[in-house]
Length: 431
Ligand code: HGY
Ligand code: MN
Ligand code: MN
Image (cartoon, rainbow, N blue to C red; front, top):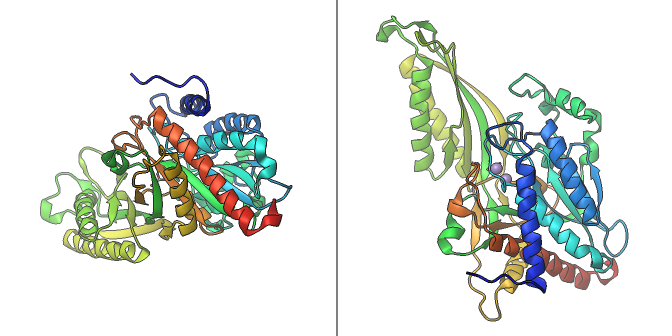
């Protein structure tokens, strides 16, 4: 039975971690679903969660605003007003039937760290901002990282016509949310951010297998998303086999072919959704649409896997007399985390270990995507992974421990301190 410290730094850190976990639970209750957690971009739940987080940001000493893309931004000035910002953050949107820590842990850890820094903000050689991105998952409009793309000045006008499953365009969703699409450019922070740090659950089993709470992220996978529609002929189920052009049969063979091609080339491919029409029990499917999420360590290996997949799908279509229609919905290059930020995180994590007991600090590659991929377009990025139980994520069973949350918040605070020392010594005038 571990006895919990009641006074001193560990007690404070434990209190912060307990409060953070309670806030994760509070945000988990803000959902559009009655059977699980679901909070998508520009929804009433997005607004409610951001309003709650805005209160926590203000209570931590930050000036709070919503940017032109619906992200929530809190700012703590440093030694003097207007200094370049160290951005801390992650996302508050979720996938359907989500866990309560994916993204949320990073935003709340950042708020907890700023509250600790606030009393000594005047000593900081930079401003510290917390950003809660509104659309990292991309599950409403199909493309992902919309909030962070706006911050990185990488918004694309063709996105305005993207529609959600109810046919609402991104433009209409902006206007309903009270945002003006014409002002999206105001979210661009290029030139105002000198570094970005994100704390995030690992969403994999490696830290748990190593028995360690934290790891330094080395890079983030290259990704592509698309829809693949197989067109055949909807016909009576009495149609003989040799006269059929069964779109669902083609899609089914494609799902197997996609995984085996990706596996053989070291890429990660996922078919997460399938839609069939006309969807009647006694009609041969005329169309079948698959979603494809494809990732790999480099852009080249991602694209080589896609080429192999498309070649195999063309063969399937030829065999079954089908045609294939493809719509690309997302593409992100692989991102390397900044070496200096990796070292700052490793130094911070190492400093948490008891005197002389500093063990190895794992360096992990991230197959999962993160807002850091977009922010890397305007600033060096660094990420810290936090152990999660069984590596489970994108599921209600997502779990972290109090001790690991203590370590995660302490490590983020220490990383900011390491960067502040480095910044102050490299440009003494900045504070
Ligand atoms: O898709 C991902 O990897 C992230 O969870 N959005
Ligand atoms: Mn995430
Ligand atoms: Mn996620």
